[in-house]
Image (cartoon, rainbow, N blue to C red; front, top):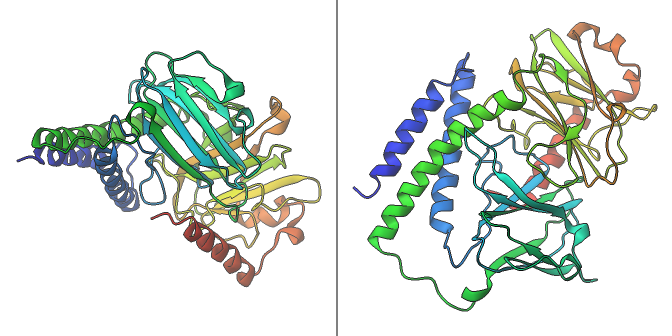
Length: 388
């Protein structure tokens, strides 16, 4: 049957999920099956949305199609491109904190990270007073002053990220056209074309599962547990981003206190991730905090409590019952290099000793009603982004 390559790939991906080495609990496995469902959805959509001469921006990861330790503060858009064609990207700048562009050569796999061709944020674009812009990407010589960026040999993906430092910020608009195909329709699909798309979706699904099971081993799991690294440029070449990473292993009667200076960077964010290398539920739970959401203590420090139990403080970051997972800090739109002094420290304490370990506890406390309001703000903000 035409769909056999896809159904075979789904079965292979299910085996990879069911036998993942990190699985210890039923919760781990159930989350893996939900992760698999999101991967199937994303890969089938991408395979059928993509038209080589008529590219479109596809959201490859979101609340229900997670991968790659997706940032709750970011909208991700990607388009397939060729290095010998010219493309025009047209849009209107939203009010989000950051808008960045990255051209990649190749794909993320369980053997390698794709090459970074170019990466920049909208500070390198000429944007009109009304927020509109037009940027071109092609094989010609770079001319950033006129919004022209070179596609080096091997360029295969254009990735755009919109980053929220405040979830009430407004998303922008974005469109990509291949210059020589604009105004023409794509060819009508054939049976061979349909078969190729099912094969492509199947290959992408298996690669997706394999890749993001391997990725943490490269960058996280060899680090000492319950520690965080100093800030460093994010691997992969994303423009003006630094990150600090770690992984936690906490008992139910323990809590981790993460202390980090409130940054002068326009964007500073923190999130937890599961061992599937995806974000935890950030809509209905506070599993992430950015520089607008986090409470800053009077001494200029942000103190976050990572724990399964509710400590009754504003900066509680919920593990949702998980004893293990990933820790990720990001700083974006930087205008200077970060140092160790800009980074976080981690300390594990008995949960019952938190009161003595938080120097501004009275400043940190929230009532159940205040906590409910924080969650409601998250739910409505995500709904307003119209992501499904």
